[in-house]
Structures are given as structure tokens and as C-alpha cells.
Length: 349
Image (cartoon, rainbow, N blue to C red; front, side):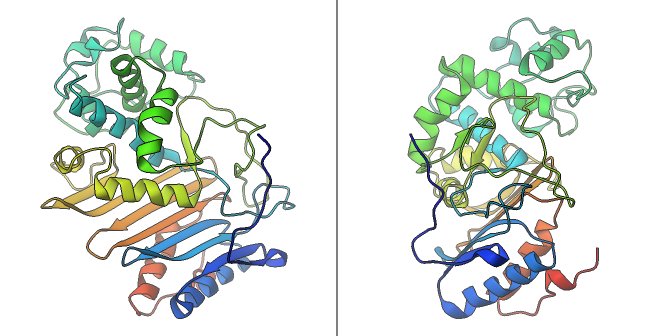
């Protein structure tokens, strides 16, 4: 299939400034446009944005360049590395399989991943979901593939703490979650997403583990426009354009894949600072009142903020340096609420 980089219907493009945006509700959209345009000109924003309020998209914009060459402008169809937010896909996959009776959250890891030491009999699937497994984080000095990560896990003699007694965020939990999805579903993780997750979520254009040859994939680069490698150390990472990212958020909010009870089980933690497979969230009755998740990888940074009480979603994906997506989100919320804010262009580094 041939892909062509093109504009989006109703997009006003300022390619000389590296900016394009869809205008809606002119007052609010214009304020958002001005905020991000100024941030871009100040060198503090390079990426894509989607903002919804009251359940409706009020702003979509692409600012800056798709790679370090500074020759290719970003478009709204570019897919971004969203870092740890991609872990939501394996976490939701686990819950789908639990709802179908193909696994139990109380099952030990050893039931699905053979060849691990005795600690795998004590660690449960649920503990992987909540980062209370006691597993250390991945040793990136010795891991460049999934097999490297599994080799290290097979050699791991003891946990950092007894399973279920404490919290420690780490990617070994994610490695094992993906392996459990594969074992319980009988297919590769990517095939599972493409068959059972993306269609129901309305995701139309995701890419898993892209390569140099994959079109419409944003490349990350540093403040000097030095471009990062696309080498993958682990597999199974979903990259999204902002429209599909929004569809995913809506799917989580409307329980299109997993039930309110499953969602509640996922986001529940004894400490609000602890993350889960869905990042951070809280339920009010059968409503996901708030959902927050951030992610980064190399010079990519991404943020998903969803406020179900307002029908508000803020999606920010950036690919230059490490930019303050939370400061951007604070400004977006202020604009939507009619409150004062500090332009990012005036915030000192």
C-alpha cells in the first residue's frame, strides 16, 4: 500500500511556521492555537495535540517537524511513540482474557511462562498489573531483546521484596504481561491486538514496532535536532496518531473492551501515587471519573488526561527534547475553563 503525506480536511496550514490546526468553536480554538503556536516559535513544543471538551473535539493541531532533518512538517496522521502509555494495551488485553475466563488475576505467572524460578509460583497476574510483583526493573545494560529480558528473569534468584507487599514500577512486569497474553490467547501479542483490541476500540491506523521503512511515523530528536535511533529493545509497542489515541481513550471511558468492574479492579491501588497498567485513575460509581497516564522514550513524551466529569480529554504527543507536557495541559485546562494561564513561551527553563 502506498501512503501519501497529506493535509486533513478543514486544516489551515502554516507550513512556514511548522503549524497546522483544525479550527472549531473559534474563540477557544483560537486561544489554543495561539498558545501552541507561541510555544512552537519559542522552541518549547514540537508535536501534535488533540483537545476535547464536553465530549466534542474542539482542537487538533500539528506543530513542527516529523524528524530531525527539519524538512518534513508534522501532520495529524503521523503516529507517535507514546512510551509507557502503550502498556495500557497489554493491561487491557489481560483483562479481556480474564473476562473470557482464559485466565484469572490470581493465577501465578508460572502457569503461563515456563522456565522461571520458584518466585514465579508466588507472583500473580494481578501483581504484574499493579507493579507489586517484587520484580526488579530491566537491566538495560544487558537487555536488547525480549529474549534477553526473559534470560535475565530465568536467572533471577530472588525478588526485591515479597510479592504483594510493596510497589516498584518496572518493565519486567510488562514483559511478562505480554507473554501471558500470548499464552492465554494462543497468538502473538501483535496479532491479538490487531484482531481483538484495535477493531473494537475503533483504532484504524495504529502501528506496532515500526521500522525505518514504516511511513508516517514521527522520529524523535534532541534540542540540536540530532535524531534518535529506532532500535527496539523490547517488542509490542503501539504507536498512535492523535485521532486513534482519542478513540482509545473513549474506549476506556465507555468500557468498550472491559467492563466497569474490570476497570475498577485495574485502577484500584492502596496508594494514589502508585501506577497500574492504566496509569492513574479513579472510578465514581460506574464512571471512570479521571484517567491520567504519561510516557516517554528517548526524546518522545506523551500525556493522556481524561476528565469524565467534564467530558474532557487532552492528548499531547511530542518528539523533540523532553518538553513539559504537564505545563501544557495545565494551560489547556485554564483556557477551557476561562482562567488565566502563563504562556509556555514565557516559562523559564
